[in-house]
Amino acid sequence: LMSVPEFLGFLRSRPDEERWELIEGIPMMMAPPSIRHQRIASNLERLLNDALRQGRSAWRADRDIGLVIESSGYYRPEPEIAVIDRTVDEEASFASRFYLVVEVLSQSDEATFNQSHKRVIDVKLALYRSHGHNRCIGVVRQDRVEVAVHVRREDGTWPDQPLVLTAPADVMAFEGIGRVGTLADLYAGTALEPRGT
Picture 1 (cartoon, rainbow, N blue to C red):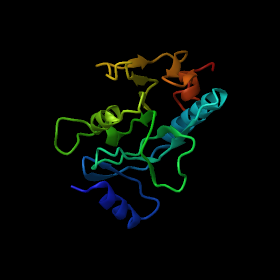
Picture 2: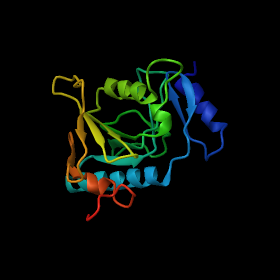
Picture 3: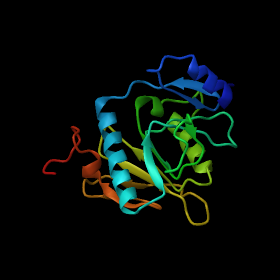
Picture 4: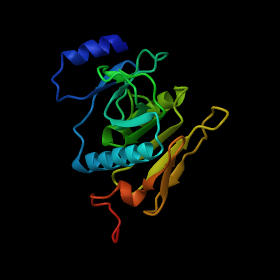
């Protein structure tokens, strides 16, 4: 198994255009994202930052940054969007505190992880839930209009099932941020964009 410091050393030896994640000590190369995937992630980053600016939040939304949880020495996922402190060290190669994380599902996320019965996304979700500062997880599909929102309860636990949004007019609202936009806003500019919006 590879630790986070070993993984960071490994990354320095790889070409800049490659993207890798460390999941349970196993380095996993991420497939190049589709244009639809990138558009959805770009839309959400803009929607989140607009909402955060309006609320004068101390947070910001960033794309494709590595996350490291201090107590988990064998993980460095790279979700599509992470909401982190606005004052984060911009020279750092990862953030160690996050409040919201969003994954736009790709085929590699739905693959079986390391010959187990778990999918890669299930392993990531367990990690994101383990971070004490994280309040919310979004899982966005790119093959249909659907967002699953996992929200931490006040007692620190997570519900067994997420809130699933599927209608274009459904509003995305995230803990600590509030209303971000509708699913029609999220899928704007893609083949999944609802007609008439």
